[in-house]
Each structure stands twice: as structure tokens, then as C-alpha cells.
Image (cartoon, rainbow, N blue to C red; front, side, top):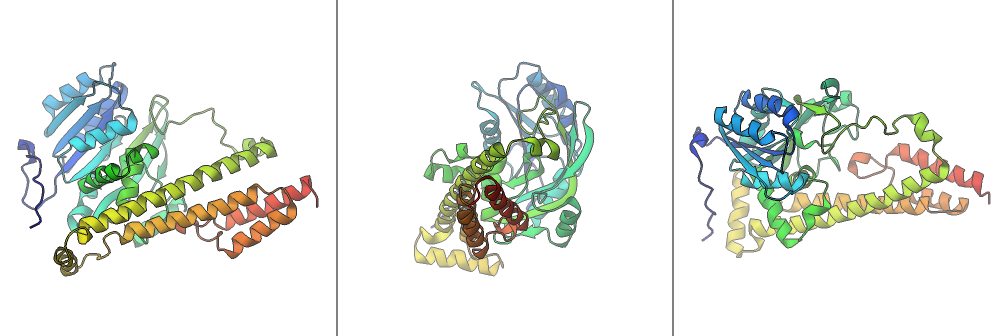
Length: 406
């Protein structure tokens, strides 16, 4: 008979309405005293207060721990502060905090943001409505500078569409299955709330593929790619976090000296632009194939956990349970669909890389034609390059013709 592993014992702050989900906040800190008070106050002011706040401090020397300990004595919910004996770094510190959480869902929290009062309430609702939801992501208000000046709003689909069109899309359709979701979300960790199942699934996958977590940019990218492939994703247009950008943060800091204008980019030499494009194509193609491989492993893991690794009767029972509850039957199908999308994108990038390595006009022109016939310039959100890059690749052929006429 199949058994379920016992849950971690819940503390006194976890007393709640039977059937309701518990929510934990996972925070990573490192020398965050300058902004930490504001963030902690915004968490305490939530209309749906968290059941616990778990903080992993990575060796702060500026009074961060003292602020946390004072808050723990005053907070209306349980606060646990874990002090690392050795520095873990950004991503691993967040993951340690998440693993220590006991809630059904986990909200990532940076040390220097400000949450809107309704953040947890808005994000928790989709999980309670649909057990297949594994991640909820909302929009963010970005501020640059020490004064936290508000500058712009960023959402999950901004990689592909304007903010105005994104809002129209989200109003019309906010729940996505893995097969319907765009290739890649534009994500900030602080804007995501994930199911605890995602953390557990990632740890199991890391046992199968040792070192896999280190190949991702952080806890947020890792958990997002797992959640979007293993279950449903809910995207909210609501702006629920004020993201304060400043020079002292570990990730996402605004650098005033970085070249940003079109004029600056145009001024770069043609050789330099070509080198940058080739390097990026190589890196992005490698990333795409790697993600396809990881998601293929995830698909196999999900099928195994669903019942394929057990006897036929147990598998039939698992399928019947999903049919009865009107949930998706595919188990690892969503992860496999995402893997296929990433593999296709890697192939598209590899063909474009071949074009950019050409030195003759005839070969470059033939590559553009081949890529167009293969459908490589289709919708970017489905793994294509988009029509804009077709124009850029045609310009590439013209540049070769000017430099090396044939």
C-alpha cells in the first residue's frame, strides 16, 4: 500500500482553518540593514499574514541579524532566523531558507523590497482554487536609486510584449498549462510564490542529476522552470511588490555606467557586434539544449512518481483519481512539451549561429533561406526568432556583401 511521508510538525502559529493552505515566507539576507526594516514591516502588514517567516543570514556584519531578532520578538507570526556558519551565496542561501519552510506554499522575499498589503492574499487564492497550480507570479513596480524612486512596472510577459498588451493578455487569460505558456517568462524571484511541491521536486531531480542547480542563475530561475513544466502557472497583472534597486544589491542592480542607448550600440565596431552576437548565440543555444535535457528528466520523474514506477494497478488508480477530479492526466506530458519547445529553440539558435559564422554572401544568403523555410522566424514566445531578426539577418548578408563582395 502506498504511504505518504509524515509532514513536519506545525508550531503554534500554524493554527488555521481546516483545509486552508499555510504560507511561509523564505528570505535570504546579507548586510541588508539599510532596507530591512521597511521590508519586514510590509510583511507584518499583510492582509493575509504568513504562518511563518524563515530567514537565512549569510554572515551579515552590519546589524542585520539584530534587526531580525528584534522583529522576531514583535511579529504576529513565527519568525525563525538561521545563521550560516559558512557563506552559501545568493541562490543556495534562498534554497536553504525554502527547505526550512513548513508551509504549503512559499513566497520568496528579498531583504530590500516593500510588499503591497494584499500580496500574499492575492497570490494564495489560486493555489486554494486549483491543486494543479504550482506557481503564481505577479507584476512588480521597479524603483532605481537609494530613494526608491518609482520608475516603471514589469510583468512576467514583458520579454515578448509591451506592458499595455501584456495587461490585455493577462486580463483575458491568466492561467496557463505548460503547453500554452510562452517559452520563457520574464521573472523576478520576489514576484513568485511557489508550491512546496516544487522545492521537493527540485531536490529529487537534483539527486538524479547531481549539480543541476548550479547551472541555473539562482533559486528563482530553477524553481520557475520546474513549476511551469510540472503544473499550472497563474500570472497576475496586479503590482504587488515595490522593487527597490540600488548599487548595493547582489542581483538586479542598476549600473549607471552601462551602455544602454542606441547611439552607443551603433558606435561599436562591426567586428565587435558580430563577436557579441556569435557569443550570445552559442551561450543561448547551449542553455536551450541543457534545459531541454533537464525537463526531459523531469518528465520521466513525474511519470515515475505518478505510478509508472509502481505496479499497473497503482498507476490505474492514480489515473482514475485525476479523471475523477477533472485534472490533467498527462503527468510528465507538460514537462515533455516544454522540453520539446526548448530543444526546438536550441536548434533554431544553432542554425542562426551557422549563418553568423558565414563569410561568403552566397552561403549566408542560403542560410537565411534555409532558416526561413524551416520556420525559424516564427513567434518568439513559441521558440522562434521573430520577424525582427529576419530583417537583422538579411542586413547581415548585406554587411558581408559590402565587406567581401562575391
